Length: 469
Image 1 (cartoon, one colour):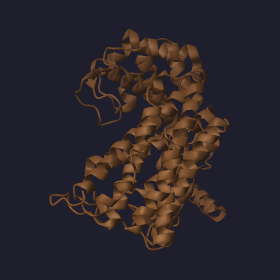
Image 2 (cartoon, rainbow, N blue to C red):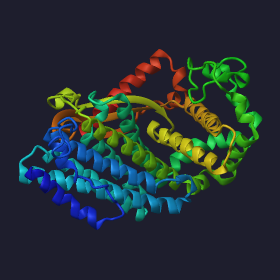
Image 3 (tube, helix red, strand yellow):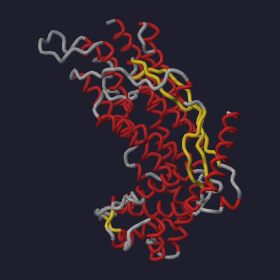
Image 4 (cartoon, one colour):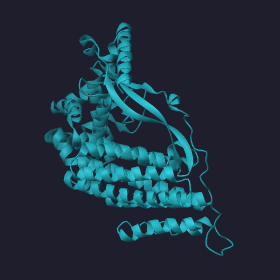
């Protein structure tokens, strides 16, 4: 069991030096786990092999990391932006320290014990660096770089613990992992908007203008069955909020008249008085911290759950997912999706703006202490903003294509076992150049001839991008 002593010796000094992290004796119990439970006990837990023992202790370490992040980011809604971003730097530093511990242990096992943890160590090292740099960049007020580092961290996190692509663990744990990874992406998007709020301002300007003309006028704009295919009498129709698309309406619990409530008006009035920039300044940092809290809390629960499975003999079995053998299997350079945006804002930027609206409303409602069904109120108000943003986009004829260049990457799945993934190495939204008249015509009103023009133009734009990238 020499490798166990080595892993312990690598991590324990760091643990002792960082009392505030307190990883709950991480890796100290690995020896008893690896040999099947308490020494000398005839009724010990089922035996767990060496690889699963290390995986279990890695999961414990990451679970402790998530627990500490969740503790330090709790109460995000109570932080003003400056204080919230300061706390975010501390939270990300904690994540960097924990993942650095894991990387050092895996690197030692690779170089000293000859175990197959080399690639996993490299990914963990990258994850550690990205989390730490994201925190440093926030501290230096370089939010654009911080956003990029968080996006990279999210990719590395998915790489080292590929729970969402492997059916070897229960669905409930997979869901927690997916939410945790998505929360990192969400925090990255939040930082991107804070770094350059222009797209957010443009997207929210129309809803605020509509609300400024009076709530009745705003509700009147929403009550246009011909525009969206909504049922007649929308304002009195009970419906599931948050799914305002054709075919998604059904009897539910929240009537659209929820928007006419005084507390709903108070939220919208507050947005109108502060303006878009004021809302970002007041709630933007708290929204970042809120996302980091989701990252930590779900990482804590999914990783502790994974370790519990291993300790109870329900080991995680391979094989991992093999998607490709070479770059050609991944499609190379291609159009990944299409979308409709505005003249200067691509669909992704508008999606980020919608995300910020959702988070800021959630925090706004929380801070106001509204006691009467705040979740329903939040969803109803968020839906109203999204619907009006959709209306703005619906008047646009600006077609975009998302270009991607992919590679086939082989990496470690669950630390030891190998998998292959099609990884996007570069992506960019490209606005398809179209005749001016066509850009002034809503996409849904294009005739077949105009779609042929758009298709040819998109193909040319895609070929140009692939040659240049």
